[in-house]
Image (tube, rainbow, N blue to C red; front, side, top):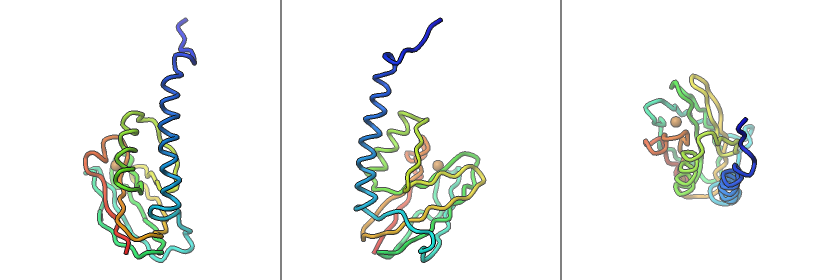
Length: 155
Ligand SMILES: [Cu+2]
């Protein structure tokens, strides 16, 4: 009976582990420094409703925030496939999208990410601690590349 041994799989597992480690290092840095941190839902100063659709767009795709503000993003998936909101810099999101394309099954929970099943709703609460321009995107395979992204300007 043919069997796949752990030795045969090792290079693939190692590649995934390295990719995740590299991404994790970015993620830690980002959560503390780059654009803010996971927000306390009780401290959200306002709610921004965002629709995610199978036309692979966020509505709205441009959001403005004030430095220090905690926003509750009320996400609605009005499509028939899964969508998600992932916050990050455009460079990080691009790298992460490439990883998702390579390893489509690779979904992991992160505080800057909220996946929503078709027809469902979900919240992502974030505190924007720095001024600047940041991005968000859907990293379901192919969605980022099709233009499912948006921008947040923090003043
Ligand atoms: Cu999507």
